Amino acid sequence: MSTDTPSAADQLLLDHAHRHGYNDVTAKMLEVWRSRRLLPDNISGGGLGRGKGSTSKPAPESFDLVLGLARHGGRGKRPNDVALLLFGEGLPVPEQTIRAAIIAAVDTLTIPGDDDPDTDPEHRLDALAEHIANAGLTMTLVPARARRIDEGIARLVRASGHTWPPAELAAFDGNPGQPTATPKDAALAAAAAAITGTMSLEDIGDLVRAMNPTATANPIASLVETTRKDVPEFAETILTDDNQLALGPVRDARDHLRDLAATAPLHDLAQTWKTAEGVRQWALDLCGRVEEELAAGQLGEAALEWMNGRYAMAGLAVLSTLKDRDWPPAQHALDALGLLFQLGAYRRHDRLVPGCQWHLLAAEGMVPPPIRELLQDLISQSVPGAGAGAVVRPAS
Image 1 (cartoon, rainbow, N blue to C red):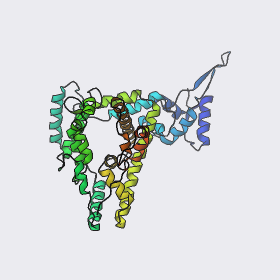
Image 2 (image 1 turned 90 degrees about the vertical axis):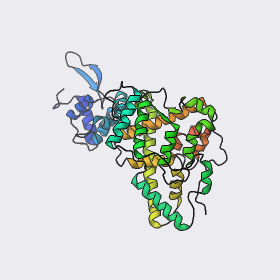
Image 3 (image 1 turned 135 degrees about the vertical axis):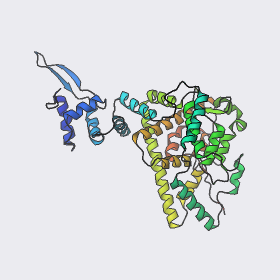
């Protein structure tokens, strides 16, 4: 097809774009977008007869897609990023294209030794540990902004004569003490978890403690560490014999994510895409609100929400958000995929161990509000127990 003389079908798309102010969209651009599988081919309408050629018309979804592509598909834009941005807006990107883009996002998670995957796992982990030590690789456990907020809250709490955290919190920690995980340990644990698809409860607990290093007690870390002792029947169902929490069949965790990207309903992927966006916005908004209170020298509702979250799982989402100053589409896709995996894991556990106390996820600080909404069907099926939804506040 000549780019100088667009088909009648393409002319309809061009006219549509121009009417909406995108006058720079050309027939050549339509060709490029089709070659990248971002825009479907026109639909053949049959022959005109007597050698007059054939008719065609744009696919119905092409009209909305052309406008989205005009917004996001400029020169130099990566096709996978464009596909993800369109998907995030709810536009009908071809399914094969969006799944390929999400899988490509998983492929950005590279680890030294990936070029020789057949190496014995134990040897590979040893080599990885040596590489991390020699290269000085680390993982940020507490981003600087979170550390400044923690310090600011601590100063105001001390100045007000209150105590935080309350002494009673220590009673909920069966293994109190200073965290021992270093940023290098965290980097190795994360890489090892990706390679094996497992992580020990001890490592998880230590990492959770290291993400709140000034805490005198960490009940959530304690719950993780004492799972086998506290709920042995549950532990037998979800843990390996050597006390590892597995993502599924023991293998590279990235393979689990690729499988999910390839098979999960697109509706579910779209839902967790929006949830991941909501979590990030909530976390950044919370930081801003707490900083305003600190600047005014007065702790308020935002600081209370922050403190509750720092001693539960919601705070981990804040730390994760602050680690990524930029949030490219590929990272957004990974966050959405991680949420979808988490949701699937909760549902599997609910089938394997009936009677889980999902209502506890509704307690303040346990999970970010957008994730609480995502899990609402699980939360609402569980009868609230004493203390559900309770807020921990500084005591005098």
